[in-house]
Length: 214
Ligand SMILES: Nc1ncnc2c1ncn2CCCCCNC(=O)c1cc(-c2ccc(F)cc2)cc(O)c1O
Ligand SMILES: [Mg+2]
Image (tube, rainbow, N blue to C red; front, side, top):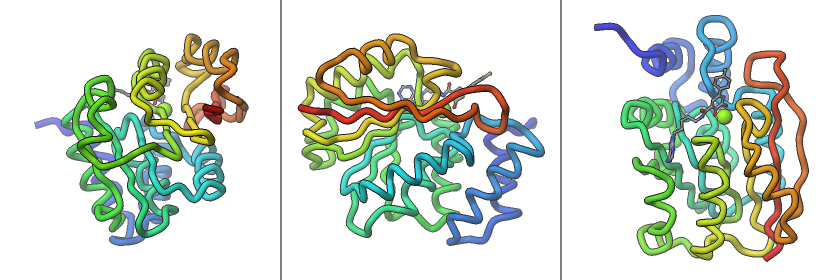
């Protein structure tokens, strides 16, 4: 049977990366996506911006919306302190199955809790299910028309505290116009745009970093 792109990406990791070495997993995926098949990972250029935000925050609790193959999951988890809580939500079971194996190849399965389901269903249950009060960092990389409703939902569920950071991928391409309009005009957030490029291309894209002011 025909393999899927995530399956071919996983094969490239298993062939070219060293077990237990997150950086070699990141490099293997970037090489595969740049030279063999494009895939919608945050990529190396925006990934460095993600790294700097994670390192600067040293977060105790992180939420990722949209795991895909686990590329950004590995980038984030490799930088977290040992007792940090990291939840990543993936809607597509096929993607989740690949991501689990990519995360395991990197040796980071102990640091990540991959939950299968839709963000809108899970966000209201996170507090009770995972014993998390608030998130220090949320990385939004799922359906672009879910960024705004899910941000409002996280506010309503009390998952954000003064200083929580939302980092949103793809605010230019594919674009999240309603989210940008809200977050940049809301007095509850202080926002900054990090100009970059769509992963593995010359097309403009960027990350929007927004600090919740409470
Ligand atoms: N837990 C959950 N809840 C709700 N939805 C959930 C979910 N978990 C997953 N999804 C469903 C998200 C599916 C993938 C989202 N990402 C994207 O759609 C995406 C697309 C591009 C792209 C750009 C230019 C092009 F020409 C083509 C594609 C680039 C990116 O960096 C992207 O992140
Ligand atoms: Mg993305």
